[in-house]
Image (cartoon, helix red, strand yellow):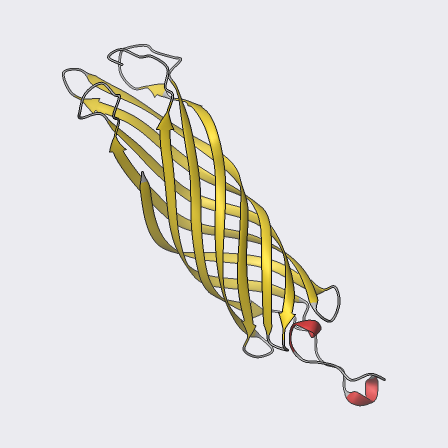
Length: 220
């Protein structure tokens, strides 16, 4: 099952130049995305048996390394760790009510690419594509009925695709020394910038999930 959402996100980070062409940065990100999806459980208790997914509260710690393109561009790749809040439900209101659910957190690896363009000393625009693999995890679902089943485990495979477009604001840009203060000429752009980023971004997300290999329960 697939779900989509568009939301605002924020990030804080710091970038430093490793050389005239290479930059390294670390950042923390958070957003209020809510991605929901559902599908019929093909091998469930009845044709009305529905599996539902919900994912929100996405937080990540990310490192990036970039290569400058001219004096204003930065092409970068990034790798990080993301945590999400998730809700899963297996529900059927047929001849008897079959109702199992669970709130839990998932953790996964984020990998992505992006481009940032410096508009002036304080502001830059950027766009990036990220993929998050939450893995294939066995989740113990809680019995919300009177079956008293305490061992219903479902294997759920999930991943997320994120496309971010945003604006970075530099709180403490490094000023260019005057020509009289240095022996060598200074260049503009990312090679001069140590920055703390405040991002307000539009984030378009897609999350997918697959419900598989549940243990045998009544009616299955």
